Amino acid sequence: MHILNKTNIDFLRWRWHAVVLSWVVILAGLGVTFTKGIPRGIEFAGGTAVISQFDQQPSISQVRTALNQSFNGQDVIVQQYGDPSLRQIMVRVPEVGKEEGTSLNSAAQKVEAALKAANLGNVKTVGTEVVGPAVGQELTSKGIWATVLSLGVILAYIAFRYQLSFAVGAVVATIHDLLVTMAFLAFFQYDLTLNVIAAILTVTGYSTNDTIVIFDRVRENLKGMRRDGLGPVINASLNQTLGRTIITAGTTLLSAIALFLFGGEVLRGFAFTLIVGIITGTYSSVFVAAAIVTIWRGDTTRAASHAPASIGDGAASSTPARKNKAQGKARAS
View 1 (cartoon, rainbow, N blue to C red):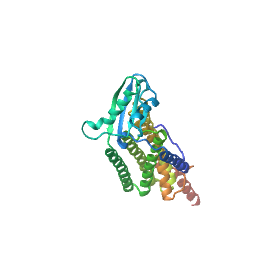
View 2 (cartoon, helix red, strand yellow):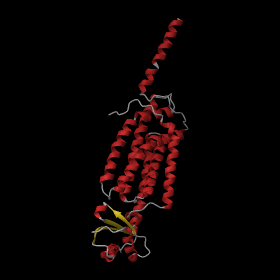
View 3 (cartoon, rainbow, N blue to C red):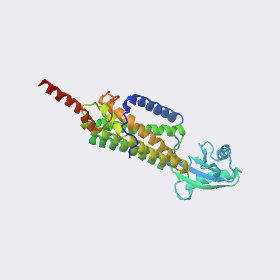
View 4 (cartoon, rainbow, N blue to C red):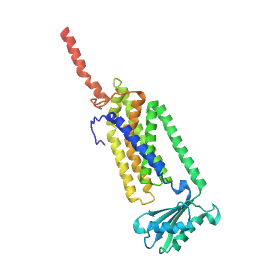
């Protein structure tokens, strides 16, 4: 299926603009992360999360006041949960009960007792999640190691299959996707949960696959366009794979948007991470990865007037020159 034919877009013309834009977003994300931080879910921070449903919707301030009396001096997080018509409030406290026997849910019972004592109407607990600090630290460590090892394997595979410059471009693009995605999580203050980590790893694989498809076309074109510089070859390859990139990214993005709108509160962070990751992954495959390859190899040539045609077109274009040369020899004789 082809939706674009014979495009001649000079992508490398915008490589420095793309690098600047990426740095602006990443630095802004780091600034927000250092000032506000990224909220960590129960899985990583440890603690107790209680979802309570009321017969009449209370205000967040009323719930927080009721809990401050029982959790004096502790950082209690109170927020609306799910559809407002359900009148549900989620309370997260860093305190956990003893991780043995019936004491495991002591903090959850403490939350429930505090809400009932505050005369906020009929309230019932509809969900509870308890994670100890040791488990949270272990999950954090494993998540970091999984990310680092995956990047190392990607670097080794592409360096073996293609060239070192291509491997560096793919890994830099992947790191770029991770940093931009984390920046948007910080901007919108989505919790860093196991669902979000799963989405980030999914986006990493998606972006790498997209980049490898483009690099594979570059490798094919390098065999038939040896007289052209690397810049024109990359531009031609990007144009030839542009239709495939749009179709793949577009259909995946529509699915992620549908999941974000109709998947419910539990999957909201997962779907948001997918949406951001798909957009930035496609962007990095087209602009960042190719730019890194040309910068690494010191190739500054571009292809403003080079048509990204197939390899056979180059051979066809040389035919008139051969005919003119032959006619000149005939006249001379």
